[in-house]
Length: 257
Length: 255
Image (tube, rainbow over all chains, first blue to last red; front, side, top):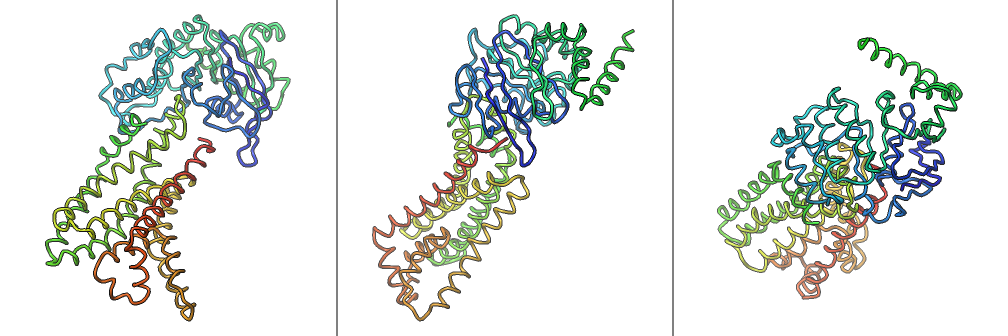
């Protein structure tokens, strides 16, 4: 469904994407993992045509990115930081979006819209919303048009545990509908239940793209975070990052026990 | 495209800056016509204001608007809309609001007090200048990295077109005063839309008789139907060219 061929991108002298090639198919949930600044968001923005690669091509459903914008009707995008016009009210935003874009069959998907309680805040201007509420609006917008491809950049960052759980349930439901879902996240435990494939980026290079089972077999670890850590010890450049990650994981686990 | 422009227009009206601008223009034009007995004199005073204020407001307002609607543009970019359509909708929204401000603020008083060819020439020049400088501002804004640089660049352009250019022209004319420069000055006027507008209106007024041989040549040229076409054509070029360049770099931009 999405084909990336030898994509390179430089921001001035910094090589953000270094010869990346990959194929994502229907029904897969791809977890894009990598330390900060490894090029995850740039890769996502290249797929959306917001960043123009210096070389290489990207195809979405066999339509090349950078020509016709029509391919974007198949993509629902939830940005890392949702920025919206300040003066616009939430209700207006949703009305505007439904006017400029048609939902794919079987019509608009208002599950998240309702579950996140957006109907009760339609009169609030976007600038008064908290970061988490904004994130809910972004998520509801991404799923609203029922697109076959979902691109979610740090979807659970800033969401409270309950909303985060709602979103995860929704992602699992969409996965069952045979959609392609691309997620970046630093919270590996969130990805654990969702993902089918792992794509690991570091300093703009793709280190691997493997399905979860292969990864588990190769590393002998069942937990995603441990499996990744095991693999990453091989690429020792980033041990510090994974140690930090474990520290967070432990902190999360202790209160539960 | 109009669907998007509607939201752009709505956003601009919420700002109230355009309303203040309309009111300012209206009060100025109205008081000019009330103070001066002679309608032609009033038009002349109004002309100086139109030539200075219109480009300035168009440039600064457009640049600020572009950077303020950056979020909107970003949001639209992730939707199935082409970049050309997004930028042109923004342009149409800004242009429509500034033009209606000009027509309400200056157009109505002029049509009421002085509905003659000179008045119409003023309205034509004002409308063209608004469109032209909105285009130029879009180019400046798209090419700039942040708001401060964008506004700085827009102000610089205004200084150049409204003040520095005239100085440069005078300097050239003095330096080459021994040579016949009439045809050359005609060309120079085409390189600055403000100058072009000024000459176009001046020659519709009686004072052009005071401008000597060059004035006579100008009157001969701009007074004819050919001159009107020339002015309209050059103004059109000034509007289309910067907008086209802005579109070109907007399409290549990384957001």
